[in-house]
Every structure is written in C-alpha cells, then in structure tokens.
Image (cartoon, rainbow, N blue to C red; front, side, top):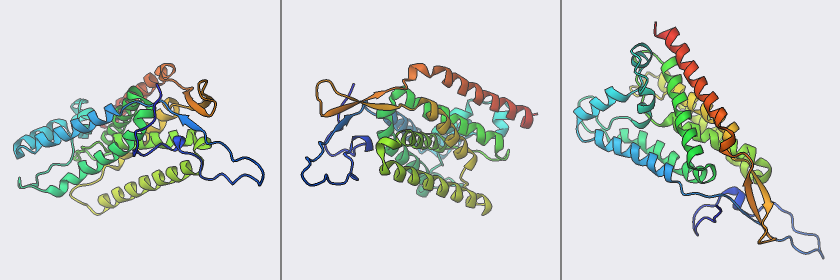
Amino acid sequence: MTSQPPSGERRHPLERPPAHLAPPPPGEPAPRRVTIQLPHVAPTVTYVLIAINVLLFAVRALSPSLDTQLYLFGSNNPQSVLVEGEYYRLLTSMFLHASIYGAAGTLMLSNALHIILNMYILYAVGLQLEPLFGHVRFLIVYLAGGLLGSVFSAALSDFNVSSVGASGAVFAILGAEFIYLYRHRALFGPRATAQMRSLVMMAVINFFYGALTSVAGARIRIDNWGHLGGLAGGLLLAWFLTPVFVPKRAVENPHALVAEDTNPLERRWPIVLAYAALVVAILLVATLVRGL
C-alpha cells in the first residue's frame, strides 16, 4: 500500500525533492523531478501508546492514595524484581510516570513535565517512524527496547531506587530512527546526516543531564541506565528489523519511483526471538548476581 501524506503534513526526507542538485549546464534540459512513494500506514500504535500513558496518569491523579498504590505496584525496583521475582514491573513501569502529587499529598504540576516530554517525543517520532516501520515492527522496537531499558535499570541501579517512565522505550525508537536514517543515508543525503547529528546531540544532552541529577543528589533523578538500555535495544533491533527501501520505477508512471522494502519483518522473526533470549539471559544473570 502506498500513499502520499496529506497536504500540510511534514514530509519524510525520502519524499522530498533533492535540494542540493546543481543547475544543468546551458543548453541542457532541466532534470525531471522524481517522486518516490513510500509505504504508509496510519500511526495507530503511537496514538494507543500515548492514550494508555495519559489514561494511567489521569487515574493516578484522582487521589493521592490511589496514586501511591499504583506507583508501589508498578514501579521498577531492583529489590522487588531481582529478589522477590516481580518481573511484571519491568513492563508496568514503562507506562507510569512521575506523580502529580508531592510528598505531602499536595499537587505539584511541575511533575507533569515528565510525561509531557516523553509523550511529545513519542508523538513526534512515532508519526514519522510508525508509518514506515509498520504497526508490528514499531511496537516490537518500542516494547522490546523499553524492556531492555527496564532490565538495565533493575540490574545496575541501587536497590533503594524505584524508576518509572516511558523514557527507555522512547530512547529505543530514537535509536531506531538513527539506524533507519543511517541505512538510507545515500538516499537522504545531507538531511540524513543533519538529523543523525541532532539525535546524537539529544542523547548526549540527556545523559549529561541525568548524570548531573545523580551527582547533585536531586530528589527526582533521571534513570540513565534505563535510557542506555532502551537506546541499546532500539539500535540493536533496528539494525536487523528496519525496513530497507530500494527505489524502483513505477510501471504506471515513468517519472515516479516506488520504494520497495527489501527487509520484510517476516524474515526477521528469528532475530526477534534471539533478542528476547538475550534480554532474558541478562535478567537471569542480574538475578543470580544481585538477587542472592
């Protein structure tokens, strides 16, 4: 299925005409503009993930006691995961965020910045990446990458630290976007290089800020281990799962190209299973080392 984005929507770099071509020599005809049609699906999974996160945040905001109960039930804590075997926390913590209530049960609206930033990045990247990756491939990167972030956090954080947030999964799709741009850098040209540079700078700034919160002893710290694990998971998964588009001449229009995915997901399920086995192995080692 191919489609063009609606008018006014930001177009993907592969769909934009090249901006760096030199003008033709005098007397030669100007080159024809070629349109490349990419496979395109609606970003349904992105909207559903945002809705789940926002809904849980709203439910917790109903009362301080309910907020505390959900946090204690679903947060990612090394003691609970590695010693008590509550592995479900690795997933549930990905859908919880910083409480809107302070320690005294009073509203602290500034804490909502945690979910706002995560959902903004998920929205911005998801709207670009999911239509190209497809629903299933995008969801695999988000969840499996986020789970590796949770495992890193449980394996490497202090036992008295509890973490929540979609940051690990968000870093996973950022890593997937980087790999996608890298694999298509010959087609995207300078735009791919500039966008990859921006992604690297964003990651560096986040890790640096997270390190500062740890050194300064802030009450709320950024979970750099979770970010690192999510980024590693996204990079690893996307390296094998990312669609690899090859432009081919459209039969019905000699002046248009159709992007064909030469790396369909159907061929990559063994990679997904191997990745799952790797995550389980890391978790088992962490349990043996820290849980005994």
